[in-house]
Length: 396
Length: 108
Image (cartoon, rainbow over all chains, first blue to last red; front, side, top):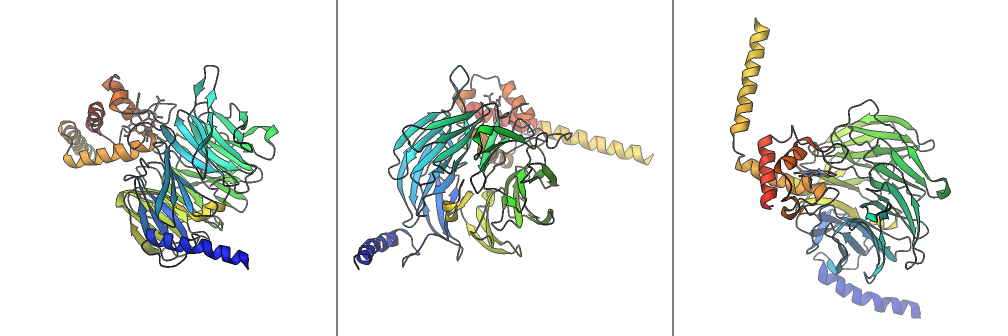
């Protein structure tokens, strides 16, 4: 059995290597129950596992991690960290160490990994655009400046996601445009631009099936939607004029459109400038209703089964998390996890949720059925929480 | 005349509170809280090191040549049509003054 022998030869060194890095590692393990938590102020991350809710190790030296985000390699072994200072770091979560790190621009905001796992795209504020890297070597493959208008101005890029067919989709904040870049041939990106989509797109998401890209608009009460199956139909405005007639409140933290809070026929989205979650009919894209909540929503996230939606809020009301039952569309629970709740992440099948409290220096784990606290892990100014199950989801 | 005397008490109380607020130096506790706010919450838009994000950089070099009054009113009242929100009501004028000084000195 030559195949088996080759496999064994590969595995042995791996065991030895992986045991050097992580303290708790004595045997081979998979990474499907692992994840990474950003410690934003110290430029470090904690590697965690959700089966027994523990920390496995810390990786330091990652630069400015405010607003950092992570994508995973398709083998769920490497985490790519996109830092605010333009740093792009590759972490081996099995060995608990930094593999490679490049500074790719002055100021970045997020990233995405291609359908085939070979390309990393990073979106940048200044100079505005996206850059595409090889996931193995972290070498720059192509630079796509977000140039708009006649004077060659460059726009900040937000809402970058991957889409089927080796595509990346992103929005130009200053220009009010959505671009679709096909990177089938990385050296020759095919770019399709949709202009005048709306005022100040601030973030974007793509549905789990990769079909609809939606950009939230800061400067208008509405969202811009692109049907990836019918690109020729252009960008459509949805929820135009939501919250009409109500005074718009100041927004102390931009909402995030991440994942896709969807349950049955409805999608749940943060309203900008209103203490509301918008409920949208998935077939007609009309607003079904709005749910009054504790504050300006930042993340509106569906439990993987879609039965609950969890919401956190902007400063100064950011000590609270609320849970909506998507069947009754009522708030069924209000939790106070701690000061400055920044992010939430569900375990792959949603029986638990991890919640970061930046100013209390801890991450809390809740049972999503009973809302009981299962654990509390100490970390330094934790922000984003990213589990490896993201590796196999479009748009994350 | 109960209602009006009640209103009088409230008025005096407000005046006192207002005076105290204007006269008081920013306490060391508040200073620490303001530094934290600057780094973390202003930082969510301006970058944690204030080198810029969705909002412009607020580093010494960037703001040095801008009038203090402009920065002060920007922070207190926000900027219409942009994501810069007003902090009036959350921060006192004294506190915002103190923040602007901090930015000017690049002491962040």
